[in-house]
Image (tube, rainbow, N blue to C red; front, side, top):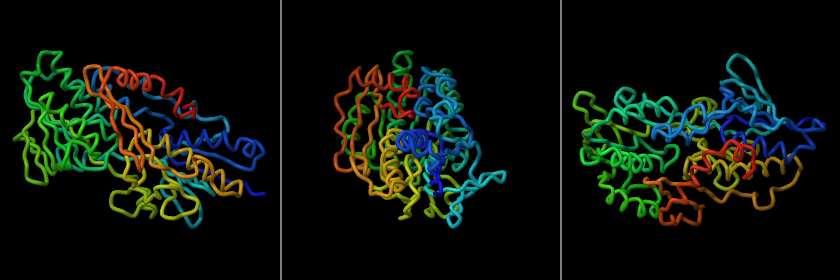
Length: 387
């Protein structure tokens, strides 16, 4: 009997959770040598990316947001540390930079998203962001040095990771400025790339009055085209200009280059063409995608991968066992859930699926506390499949 080889590319929340759930579900077959589950990760470090925002806000340290991937994986899961060069679908092999070739029968693409600040001229020197630990710390230092002026917070282009994050940062900075006695010395502007404050209408209806209440001016249809460092102005494709003293932008995002080069993600953005229910890639029977890597019209967030992973696991387990997927994880229904910081120690919750838009509860301290507790317990729960 030939071994079923399950290869997972990416050691973030989606890849790690998928590996651990597979190891649990197929443990007897793994122990008998009938199935192998392996993860390929570029660094061997598992990073809790939602924590970067809290570095920027002064409440978190980078070292608290990282664990070794090996420590989070079930002992039955093999781990390969290396950068993927390409996927050879004809040979069902993944090639690693440096020469290694890993065969697979079932391939899971949990490869996340790339940020590309350099895609916009002058972004790296003029704009701040919070999508890496280093960038978040740099933003924190800029906020510490800020004594008043114009702050512009916006989104360079869509899609991007953690859709609520720029609004959250705007609300949190506004609260901090009040605490520091700088709010009266500061103009705040929020630039949205679409016609409202947030992509989902019900969330926008919640957020827009909060922006107004906090005195943050909303600019819609503002897609960043250029940054003028001499005039300290950011310009939109639509022709609007916003002057800034402190510029905070979500950088452009794309899928992984090797997916584009391998023909798995043929669209210009590099996002994987993913079935919204089965999570199969481009109709392939043995290739799945989850998390930020997909082209699904959903939040690129850890919770999305959290809900998608059991569906991928059930599909692969069914294929290994020669049956059809069944039960509550037979298909993915678009489930997403995330906490949303409002500032002043308050938050709310966004929970939705394909058929049910979010109905955010009134912001209160409970939801803020929920996010803090989730952040602190993440490594003990989510990647290991305990929640």
